[in-house]
Length: 148
Image 1 (cartoon, rainbow, N blue to C red):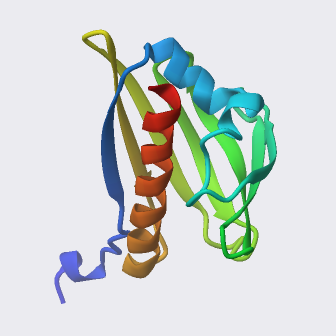
Image 2: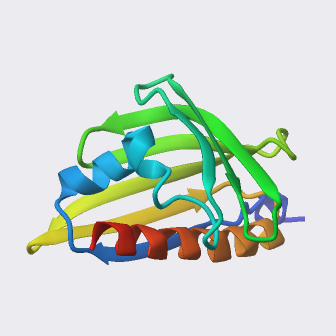
């Protein structure tokens, strides 16, 4: 058996969005609890809880409800914080705390706006990645609308 067959490949995803907002405004949308509640989550369900201690080692927790009434809670800790440029944080759902993945948000100036690149890696399996791709796509579309 070759060495390559023993390597565990953890699925990941990368999504990009152009935003009509400065890198500072994009960063603030991710780091201010009063702003994140206005765009985070799936569909048009409300964000009911957002606590963000945005510093390396600081923790966050976000709770939201989907239109069908289902509640979701995610939490983690910040690993990298570079104001207006980069956030990296662990990601774990309350329902599956043993499945910890990693989210990195990069923000670059792009003309009069910004280019946001979200990389989510270390998924448990491909289904988890695919579910998160759908969820993050909805979430980032809401961010684009919020910052427009």
